[in-house]
Length: 491
Image 1 (tube, one colour):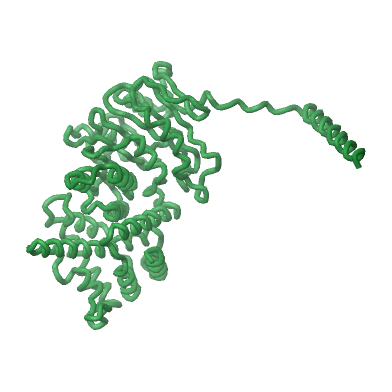
Image 2 (cartoon, rainbow, N blue to C red):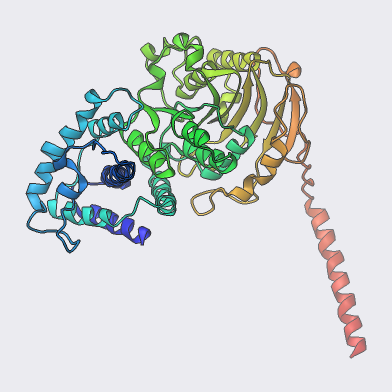
């Protein structure tokens, strides 16, 4: 049912002249779903208050609640066409009254952690792009069918929403920046193993895939006490995101995964001076995939000790600075970071090796990121002790990766098993055909080149000469003739 509802909404958006791409489809679906979710949340809270003999103060004024503007119903439970706005009236109400009203919550909210602030942020950053009021009316009716109350419903909705985010990434253009393959994220989380009471951070949050998966991982493994659930909801997951649409998608993704008021801030992470980061701003765990290949302006570079235009290198500095001593990180980065010879890259590798224990480097195959056209590695490190030994693992799923052959959880199993114990400085990891160790003391000091160079790859047999091939063919011909003669004799 849910899947068909999403498909029906996409089909309607395709017909509307205002929504042009997968990115638009998910953006428009997101604001409608958010208001549908908010209505269910408010009704749940009102029911809880009534059970306690109290009264609930609704966040939204009467005219802006879902049952009044989106789906006014008669006593028979069906849409009341006399009250329901449609056509031009509906679009004008949404654009000129609903969005400005909701955007105003940003100024009214007590602090950024509240759902009131999230309402204001979302509707300050998005516009309604649906131009036909008749199409919008149909979409609202489909959205009204989506149930948000049961946890099984939310689970299925979150799964479908993830699929939409994935499709958006596969659609190309800038959609890919929001999507990291979930099997890779899950493997990173299993190796890092975040625990209840730890703060988990992603400063390039995108669609919040890392935070959503970390929530699932921690929720499944923790004791389901009231205190733990409150800690997981309110004081565990933190993120920052610069782009408007990604911010909204991330908020909606976390809500569907069970976080009521996500601690996601809409800001340019790199606009913050890392020299201002204090202990109170630091985290126990950082999981991230900063944007590939971006270039930052000179004024942004001034916020960093090692100045470079490469976005990912600036993010890496931010992440190192944002980790608590003893904190753990897993960061996806372009493989060229390991070997670039410019001064900034060499300085950053030196800084990473001296301030952190870079205990593991996971070398990912080409095609892991559909449409991105880059090779990546994952850096696993612990802050507060220098690196002595690095264990490399070269992932080889035994097939060409791509849209029709995406990464799966089974591909990651061996790495996760071998990597789980690879966290202590100086301790070597398993040596296999896919994995090996290097000692930092053996690196060339001028370059500190960390490129994966697998010494355990089996040597390929040398190519044979034409004479050797002819000799083999003649030998096989003789063997074949001998077998045929033996068969004739038996006959």
